[in-house]
Amino acid sequence: MTPEITVLDRLLEVSELFQKDMARAFAGTPLTPSRVRVLWDLAANGPSTQHELATRLEVSPRNVTGLVDALEAGGYVRRSPHPSDRRAIVVSLEASAQAFMATMQQEHAALTDELLAAVAPADRAALERGVTAIADRLRVLVAEAAEAVDGAGTS
Image 1: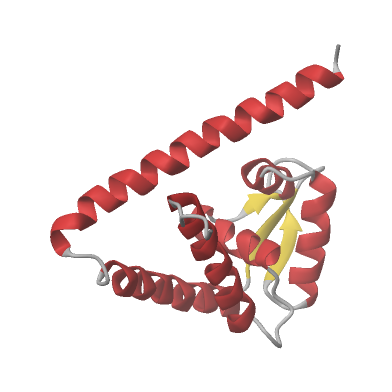
Image 2: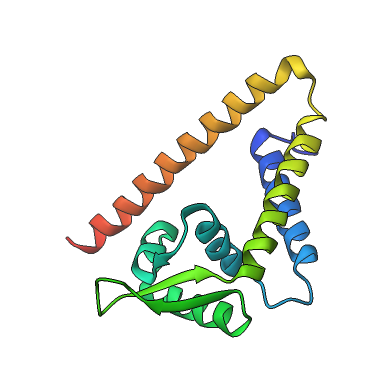
């Protein structure tokens, strides 16, 4: 007996397809999904300290340091002294990375349009509400699970 394919199965499939597409798009470059997250964040939020990046990306400062090191070596970002805090370093996109990210944002918008075109116009609003509701609920479940693990470790 073949199990029924569920919504969760489809969401996992979509996630895997996005990962495969990203791997294909960045093959032959030094970019990884984690490095692209840093670039995407900087494009959205502008120059930031490494601490701010770590906080927004929910990773350790050490992890951000490694990501920024690799992106700096690849010519995607630059570090500069913070204007008012001698201990902080500001990370910003290089001009070539700004252009790269603008292109990526355009491609992102085009893919969004193409994917939504597969859904009947009358169903799009419901799809967006449903996907948002699923993401919101999953975010809560993940946070609750993390709290349970953290709470169990501090007893």
